[in-house]
Length: 133
Image (cartoon, rainbow, N blue to C red; front, side, top):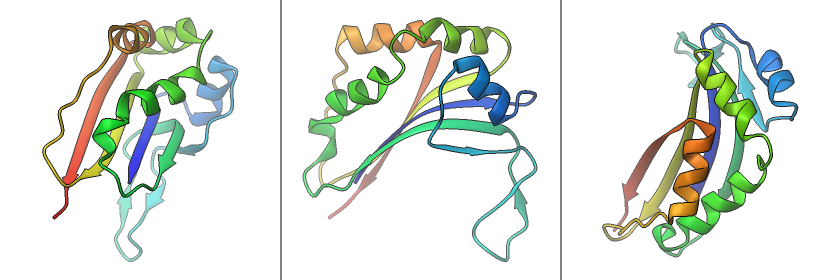
């Protein structure tokens, strides 16, 4: 399983305001204070969030296709880099979230063009690898 999100987190701007600033619709969002699963627990979201999501169930090691998968998600925001950077400058956190499973310790390689795009967005990167046997 490979899941890549481009998320915007904010203490002040709600998902609708973020969407208007980006001039694009997200795939997933939540509001600060909203309760979230698992049911029965009374946890609340600490921040507003707007996300673009991409997920691909796959039995192969996701680390091998990761750069292309990330590039595909980032292609959806092409031409809007300054809008994301403006959100970062106004106190929002833009983050590329990567979650995947692997049967071996992956060697991760990120081409310069991909890194340049992340810098242009003002994005942080969070990578979680779940090892399988």
